[in-house]
Amino acid sequence: KKRLGVQPKVLYTVPTGQNPSGSTASDARKRAIYQIASEWNLLILEDDPYRFLYYGTDPHPGEEGEKEWERPKSQSMFSMDTEGRVIRFDSISKILSSGIRLGFATGPKELIDRINLHTQASNLHPSGVSQALCISLFNHWKLEGWEKHIKKVALYYMKRRDTFEALARKYLSEHAEWTTPSAGMFVWFKLHGIEDTQDLIQNKAKDANVLLLPGQAFSPTNEKSCYVRAAFSTATADDMEKALSRFAKLLVAAKDTNQSPS
Image (cartoon, rainbow, N blue to C red; front, side, top):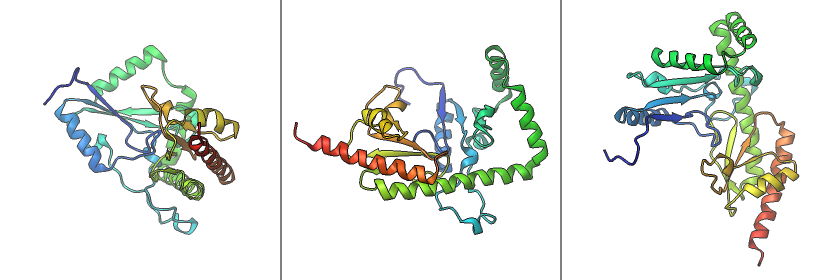
């Protein structure tokens, strides 16, 4: 093994519907990552808030097919762990209500105990009202109700993904490329002919009432980026169409400006 500087001790990953890229790691890729962590003795932090929003790349089955539809299978890195090196983090906020601000961690007892001690010293504990609400709901639902709910949520986001991507193909096919998300609520556009999206998004798009995020916002080194992140979680189909049509016009104008003689 060739050591390059200080050897890391922790590997952090968001394997499902990652923000901002919307990408989801395959089970094979997760196993490969786990093997690397095992070889280098790394602790894996599996941050998976969009796990239950995994719906796959197939299109929405339609109302008539929803009853028979099943969420695609996906293996967590925690389920692969045989060495006690994975701490898994799940979110309740993403599947019940964002305002609940609750999640849970699963992992080796020694590490979870340390997390609990840190929580007691930092924020005492999450909201007691939120905890009471969730446990009452889960006791009422039982496992069957929980499975029914997360299926409904996955289908909801799957349908919104299809609507957004159809409109993106309509307006942005000549201006950008992207990968179809199979989970979560994000699309990561790579713009053609625009090397820096910062001014375009923070100023021109904002003035046109189009809410997006420039790729530079996600760079730890604040580097220029040709990428833009979009979210389809709350906008209506009409709002999606208005935003994407306006964005397309902005991209045409930006390219014309770039190509005009100085």
